[in-house]
Amino acid sequence: MNEFQVRDYKDSDSNRCRDIHDLARPIELQGSCDPRAFVPLANDAKDLAEFQRAKKYVAHDEETIVGFIGVDEGDVGWLYVDPKSARMGIGRALLRHAMMLINGRSPTLLGAAGGIAVYVLDGNTPALRLYRSEGFEAVDQFQSKNNGYPCTVLKLRYAI
Image 1 (cartoon, rainbow, N blue to C red):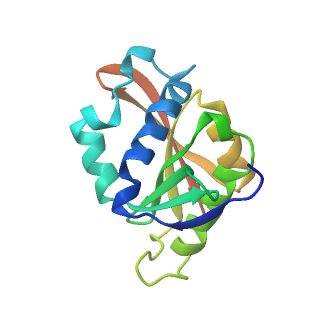
Image 2 (image 1 turned 60 degrees about the vertical axis):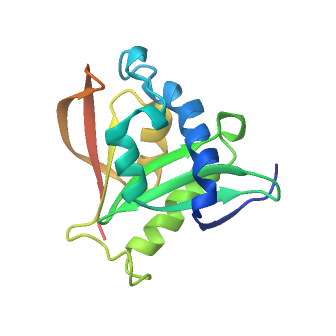
């Protein structure tokens, strides 16, 4: 896959986005949290509700969805790329698309006061590398639980 486009999420994208989440989530947990914290999105009522609430965008080639991102109240979340398509610029393109919309170029996604926030598991090196390369800086760190397993979460912020 060499070329992809970003578009608004459609309800018909739900199954493919859940599949991508379930493929990429174990990678996200590596070095961040006990791997037993993984629960498929369809079986995690809390995360599924957050996923459904977020305004989502998908990256796709001519045949299939290869990644997605969600935005909720000016925060970025739900950035997942199919591991088979990782390191091809898809995550960066999705992030930039969401940031452009949050920065006030869309009346439906107004930026939050103080900038754009994202929460990342400490130890999720690929995500941290991406966000930092796009100008996000750590502003907070706290202990949390991921499906009952302890983890450290970093709050990153991009100043608008």
